[in-house]
Length: 543
Image (cartoon, rainbow, N blue to C red; front, side, top):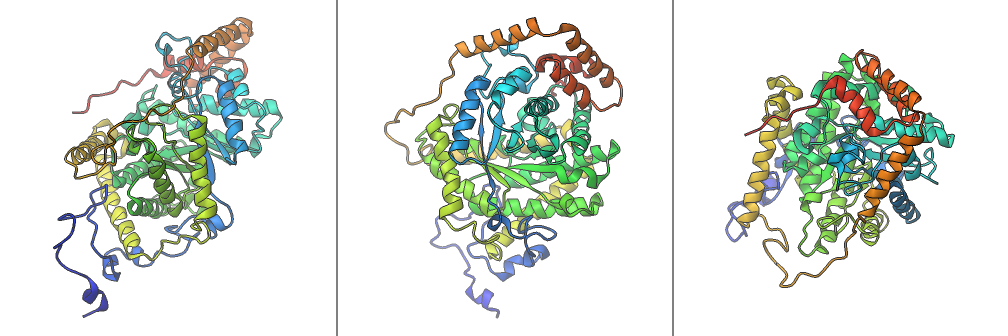
């Protein structure tokens, strides 16, 4: 009898539960041994950091050379207010900017649109024109800071606004670094801030790929997002599978548009959720890297090593935050951030303790930033590369997630690809079922949420929250209308006409969008020009 068999216990007498599972429902063994890796060849030999299939990280030295980018997501009210918050966070040691836009900006409506009333500046910063963008980055040299922008349907417009502001600062576009989310497929799956039908929306995505290849070579052209899929209720396995399926669809669309894989793939990046189940989350990141490397090499024939590397930003799980006992969220966020670091993230946002109640206050945002700094400088986990490698539990879970995600990918291929899987409602139904199962587990207390269904406080303490002054909306609208009154209307209309002309052809849209931005056209006007050509997406009901 092998040592592993001798030492492995049997039965579950005296244990707290009859069975233990991860948040994704993967059975958790009482003890993991060498035998647990059988059936998962890659788990038995995870390789080295910086080498295919990058299970252990995309860089050989990882955080020993450079820490992950500490990029706190922020934006609220007006551009001037958000600019103050950015300067504050940069002064406290934040290493990159991450811009949250308000809902009207996300769906291509100006602040004075009737449907924007009451939403201006509420969940992010209001950006209507190049003047707002200049104010947002006033005093921040764009060629010396990395910026991430969480924007999708209007991603091309906001990216061009950023480039236009950089040009006004005298910065070389070749030196700009950062990421545009630009992941429209997950909007149809999980989030809902879409504008156009799927295929013209995909055309805009690949136009961004092509334009950045030539003009913004250091820019990540997309952040393929599992984060919002997870926030909608998916499991970790579904997060990996559906995110990589989206990524596969983007790569294929770019190839169909005539781009060569190694021309654009090095500028792809990913965005994952960091949730509560520490071991599962670490394994999830490792499995995603391994799967993507194989997809890019074997399916798409990529040869540049940078094309095979899944580089990702992580954000701690907003859906895990509780309005009850919000101080507990500091602990949750710390564990989630640790999972992201042990999983090998390239950049990280840590949520604030009060985000289940409102946008974060300055004090709570600082605590969230300090959480990352303590992990980086006090815990020692950044001092060696992939310190969890070789753990039987971690390697076995990595193999389990890889295997389960691969089955989903095969199912999606059988359906005809991700666009067909979305159109049929398959992806949405799978997420809805997972969300229902989790909620049922919380309600039956099979899944304990501290402060919610167990360990409740007798009295809830008041937590200070950020409030947006309603006058800010009126001021934003007044600035927008003043801009329209003083701009050169003929030049603006000519720029919009050029955009309309290009939209009717296969020409790249980005030069015309940049020209419209620089002519003081607004986000809403540019979006409406494309709406009149492409139409608007109508959501189908998924039962």
